[in-house]
Length: 548
Image (cartoon, rainbow, N blue to C red; front, side, top):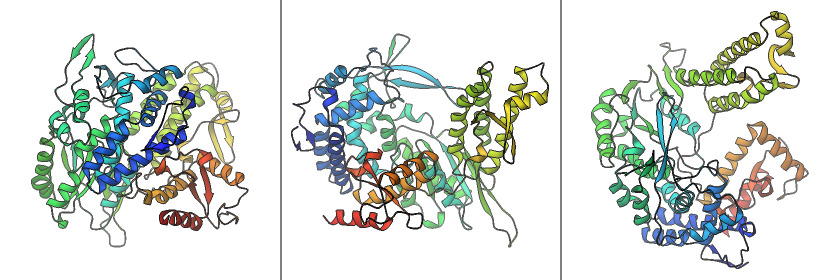
């Protein structure tokens, strides 16, 4: 194997797809991404362009891009050409086909998926080659997007989630002197109306390739439709492009308005809220700034869905209902309550009922295996808020649905017989829907705890933040059953000893999960790349590495 030269691994000795040294490949690409992020942070845009060209021409990066599109969930979905890369020969040949010269993207295949409100959301499915090209250029563009991103933008960014967005809402609204008004903004057809001219002028990537993607059009019903605006929903690079379009809104508001206006900005993808000291501030000063900012990019606010609401009345955001309750008593403090929204809970219950009706004639254990992932997914999403009461209420509704399912199966049997047949007792709890040893997951059994928000200025491309993200990973693993199993496995493999100081790792000493090959340098989250260290040893190890 040849050495790494300028961030690339020479591929002349790769016999086929299975001979590629993936650990070296990921590390090589990651090193280039770190250099791009550093240059973007220093605003050295000439160097950014040079490093981006180096990355997209790298055979190693092309291999990583092909691997991404052939291992994700959409790998079996073809574009307009009907081609999928399923064999190692096809994947190896695809690496050589990712050339910028003479590259012409094909139109997207238009499909429609259902939305939560009952409508249809249009998606554009690129061909495998176009997906791989987008993944390749995304590798070069994402470090810039992370560096330029708003501090409180949480959608489609590594290490950030909706939980961080709602935690920031809590931080901005929970205090005694927090703002009392919120602007709930909704962008009208965000992805479909972004100005192509603005994208070409301001997005730091190859302009010709970007313009070809934007003007590729889509095919629906054997008819080709051109695209004059917007980025196609379904492309790998589209979320990053949308983030680059909306980045800068928070900085504009903070720089244009005084501190007494109490401006807090939280955005997840194209959904965002802005707090203000009064309704007048939001109406006369904040809203015009947002309208002007969006107009430059070909976007506009939806008049029907954009509204200004007092925090005491409450508002919905990302599936949660946020409302401040005033006690009006000096002895009792006001408190901010965040719970699953009624609309979200109703949609979840409807999904559960629909799935249960499909399982009318199957065995009880099959019903449990089918419903458990749905229940656990909804519970894990909402565990970061005040969900204890909503969980208990939903558990009761699920129990009623399961009771009706059980009774319908045996119309001639008595209720006592049905109870003995489908429901069990466990300790002090009764009426548990359980088959042999496999119980149905109860939402109230999911621990609801305080979520610690990601630091706003933390970057996955900054080596200084490697320790920070390791600590967050440790905390995340400890909060789930699967994560705790991994921690126990690591502890057992190390015989309970810290590799740095050779002392025992106990509950009293605490522990951190350490990546032997740092993630910023391409290290994975696989157990083979993880170690358990004492917190002090972990900090010491990273401090020594920083000096070297």
